Image 1: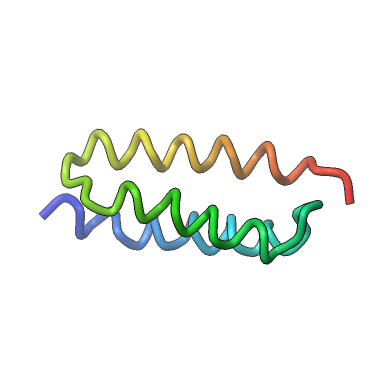
Image 2: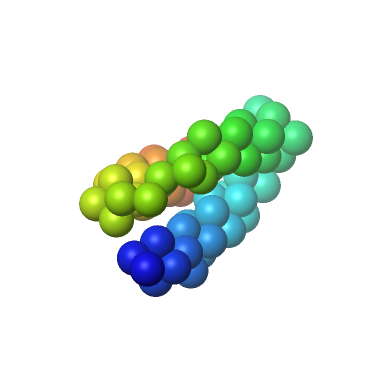
Length: 70
């Protein structure tokens, strides 16, 4: 199943974003529930192309959050 092969990649990007959220200007308590909600909303996806598109979006967000001023 295609979604099983992408699962580790989704978990990896979630953890990376979660770690970046620790330095988020509004605080980790603000960032974490929103990150969880964003990933939970896409949990029912089964199409491999859609999942890859979402991973690319998460990578884009990761690049943007890594430049946040501390």
